[in-house]
Image (cartoon, rainbow, N blue to C red; front, side, top):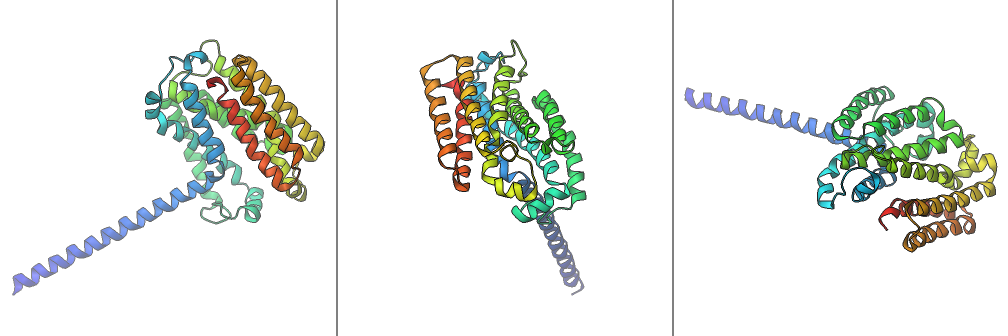
Length: 319
């Protein structure tokens, strides 16, 4: 009888330990899921225009790497194994930018009205924890860039990120557009360097020149996004290009930028009729929408067309 009682006690202890282990494991799994969801909410708004577009740029241009003096052309079978690194490079840099952009009290107050699902206004994370997370991520992105490639874009993007979010770069609408253009160029350069293992300044620097053209195209046209938010920006006192120079002048600036940089891009890669047709159709459609549909809904649609026009420029070398 004593032996049976002892066995029962042992089984009970084992069961208690098993239940305790399962509860602990469940607790940590839930915390990991919660943290992953918080990170996702930080970057959710920009996954398409930054992470996806950067990967498309890097993968597409890696197939013509020799034209860019960035080593031999790569087949998609050679690029696909680098996909996780290319995406993680973009995602980690986007995360650090958005954390800095969303952590300030003014940004939290605005998000509380417009985007209450973001981590800080939703109180998923405190400002203090956000700042600690930011300081943890910076050395991580440096280590990733050192081992995988993309170190120069990483350093430049970190500098532009600080300028934009901490040193008042976003307060001037024209400087904001310039920093947007420079930032996008770095986001495009990083995955390309990860795929090819060559810097964009290699050889005759053709890749850097092409990125410079794209930077200028974005700088002179990215205020297309501001037309849809004019009333809201005016209400909070935010300076944007349409509010500073006037609605019509700002639209003319976009139209001129679309035309000029499309022409320069076609000239840079050779004026083949396919390139001219692609630039004319995407750019022409966007400009027509810009002047024809001058409503909040129309301007939101034009902003989506801007992304299509930019994608057309990105794939121009492959056409």
